Image 1 (cartoon, rainbow, N blue to C red):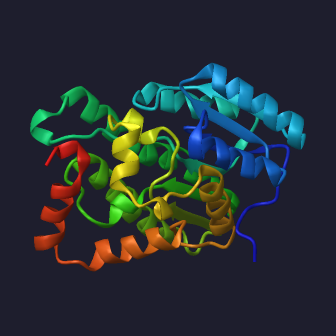
Image 2 (tube, helix red, strand yellow):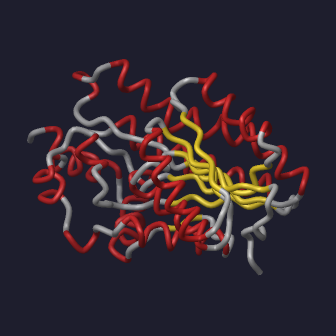
Length: 272
C-alpha cells in the first residue's frame, strides 16, 4: 500500500533546503511522480531555476518561498503563504540543514545556534505547523532528514551529531503518535554525499575525500530516490548505501568508551 498521497491540485509537497543537493533531488523525485512542489530556501535565484525546470519537465505546479529557517517569523510566514495560495501541505520534507566543524571550545556561538535553529528548531516548528492539517485530513507524509551521524556521538561536529540524533528520535516518536491517523513519518539518514555540504561545514575537498572511503559516498540523486521510495513504503528509517547501513549499526552498538576517542582521533576538523 502506498503511503504517499495521490497528487491533487490543492495539495503540495513542501521541501526545505530545496535550492541544491539532496533537497533539489527530492523535489525532482516528487515532481516526477506528478506532485506539485513548494520549494523553500534562502537562494531565490536557484529556487526559481529549479521551479522552472520541474514545471517544464513534469508539467506540475511549482512555487518558490524564500525563507531563512533560523528565523521564527520566516517559518511562520511559510504556512501563511501556502494557505494564501489555497494549498494544503500533504508531504512535508524537512531537509534544510548544515554543520559546523571543530572543537566546541573554539566554536562561534552564533554559528552553533544558527545550526541548531535550522537542524532542530525548524523541524519541530514546521511539523507543528503542518501536521494538524494532515491529521485532520487523515492523509500525509513527513520526511525528516537526519544523518548517519545520528547513531553515535561525533567529536568534531558535536552539535551537528546531537541535532541529527534529535531528529531521528523525534521522527520515531512522531511515528508512534501518528500510527492511528493515516499520516506517516520517515527519517532519512544519509551518509557522505558529495554535494558541497562538507565544504560549507569548513572541510576542504581533500579532507572530505581523505577521511571517508569512496564506497560510502552515495549521490544526491540516489539518496533522494531511496528516500521517496522509503516514504512511500512507510519505512521508519532510510539509510542509503550498504556501507552506511553497516556504519549506522556499528555506531549504535559499539561501546562509547572506545568509539568516541576513535572518532575524535580520526576527525579531520580536530587536527589530530
